Length: 344
Picture (cartoon, rainbow, N blue to C red):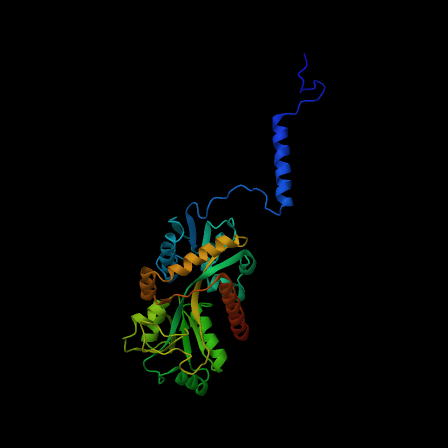
């Protein structure tokens, strides 16, 4: 006998089809109410270890900055480890390229420097990435000034004396740096461009041979790293005239800045920024920036920075991107004025 509530002539509807129909109707109702559709919950970031690519060998100031900041950021990222991956080569370009070509998911970050982010391209090096398009700035990781010293026999005792001597003796001053296109080379060319003095560049392979020749009197002026200057501060054969950063070194409080020496607004530093692949979600970038800024107040970080001559700098992602843009413009003017090119 036919059930009174059932028509055998009506087609049966599978349960799955009914369920799909109800989900669609439910989504439509949410839309009508102005509510967002149901989405699958995403795991909280970070859910695993974060890799930090340092594009230089272990031991240098860039490596120290990456390691101590990465360690301090861990507790502010849900205790997920920040693992340093040293990928040295091509003045930082190899490691930076690895970051640029990584998935934009917040799990591969990098330490971008003034070379890999700005000056290598300005100096004519063909890079496998576009720093402006392929990378996003997360925050500033600190800066490191340079120091200008002269051989003891040179009759100058200040930056103004050096400028006056170079102008009075054109073609007589030689200055050494740690290499063509190095931060020291660019800093001195910057000084030349804003003062109108000249000088013959002598490139060295690092600070050690440069310091040896300044001490021995073979070169008049040396542009040294902060640590190199600190190591020679008490050497009677080298006279430190000024530091190139906007403020004095904590370890060399008696040495004025170039700006204090009368070259207003002068600021030339080696700097690092935390970078991520372009397309990294903004909430992840904001989370990383907050962890980085908080790490700048960590006592261990401050102690390690002080030992390396590093100065902590706190910036938002936008401020960091604007800073890099200004650096690109500044060093672009210097490179064009001096007609500098890297020679491999």
